[in-house]
Length: 108
Image (cartoon, rainbow, N blue to C red; front, side):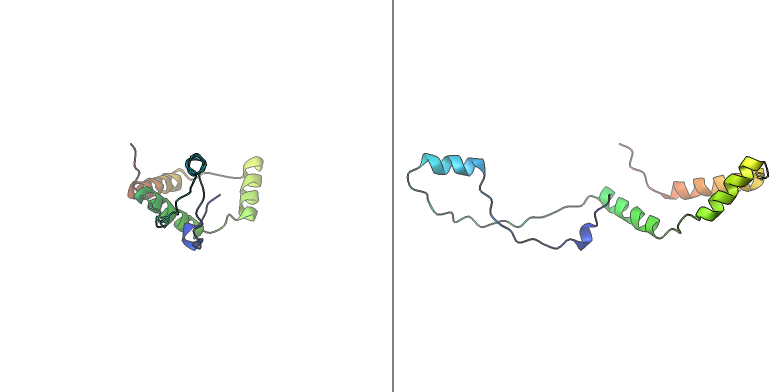
């Protein structure tokens, strides 16, 4: 499940007492008032995450699968009526490979 981080709203920051804070407060007789400023949360998105987000946006713009056409092709295959044009198939594979070479893959 993808989460669109661009549409998230900022939450108000509420200080949370940690177990370390509880132990230090329990060990002293007088608790000193906390004067430390509350730091705002920050997020850093890597270039890889940005590429993934861009790819997801492109995929969202692709047309839906035509289930009727899929059913027709399945029927034609099962009945032996579906013929493969080897030249058209080779051209489609070459086109697909060309599109893949345009994508950047980070292989560490």
